[in-house]
Image (cartoon, rainbow, N blue to C red; front, side):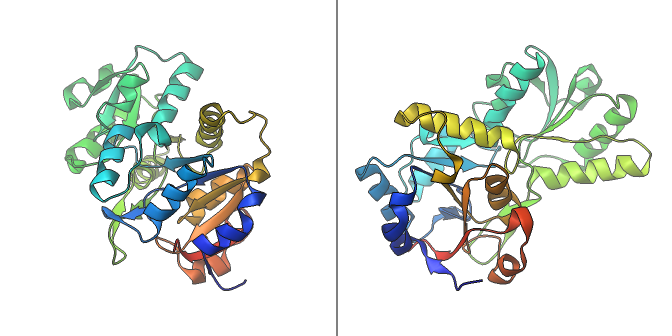
Length: 289
């Protein structure tokens, strides 16, 4: 595998090969609340050239409005409509399953405004009401993990046919400039399903965000509508840039998008060099600038 390149000069040489650019956020443009070097300049250039781009994040704990404000505090101006979140896929799930109006128990947060409520669901976080719910949504943020996970485990023992929706499939996410991580909703969901599996109960989480196809197709549709691109846009003319082999790269390759790995988040050069199949990036970048 070739040595990593710097994205900005590489993009100067290769931008004519693409018609749209998708960015991950955490570990790609920001990390732990800090804007990564080059992010401001690259976004400014794309805007100046009216080049189609969109940000796609597995952060289901913050609404796109909250995520926009968070990045603005760090100096990166991104409008809410320039962001698609894994939480947005709840609307696709609800419309596809006819679940509108049903009540779901939510573990933790799903942004403000709440993605589940925006999707047409009723929500509760009261464990006393969990058995009145049609399913569980695994959110993130600060909450009583012990009481909530115990309550959810016992709910699925009593109601093994109820769905467990997971907007963010990630086990962990970058949370600082020194390699710190936070535990993702996907990690919690797999912990719960693993315990249930030991009990002989097969509860398969329903994953909605990257690397799953639903959120990618939705994002490309949003991008095409916003920029007036044809909805039959060839996937090979879209570049996905992110820091996660298992999320950003795998999802891009499943849809035949071109994929670029940034080594500014959770993936190392050694991991990238050893990656195979769906997790092997087309390009590797040491930094944005």
